[in-house]
Amino acid sequence: PGARVAGYRRQLSWVGSSMRSKLCTTSLVLALGAECACNALAQVKPEVLVDQRIAAMRLQGKYLFPLVPMAQGKVPYDAAMVARNAGYLDVLIRLAWDGFDPSTQSVKSRSLPEIYAEPAKFKAAQETMFAETNKFVAAAKSGNEATTKVAIGDMVKACNGCHDTFRQKAP
Image (tube, rainbow, N blue to C red):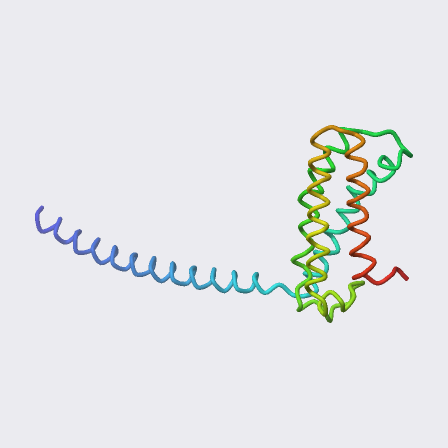
């Protein structure tokens, strides 16, 4: 029986070594593959960036435009909708900006070259938008209808200020 156990140990030892080798090789291949996949994802095509920023801005419009008639007193104020949309806009307003990478300059869109020619001015418009959105979100959370209506108007002005300067007019 002792010789038989020793034989099994040798056999298992060889299998274990082979399995460890295969496991190490597989792990190395997976690690390299994951690195290549990450690099490929990190190099997003400019067309994709433009599509993403357009989609983000469309969503901004979806949640901002219903608030405008409320702010103007044309439709009844709906505090629940304002609070919900404020939460969405707090995130959505920040999404589009990554899509204005210099690599997107040559991609057809309504963006004007001034975005890239005057980056400080564009960044200032972005910061104004963020600041006005923060004021709106705070006003919506406060529940003060009058303050919230003013904040909606100020946020719309910030949106339009950027669009008037950095976006081509619709055909």
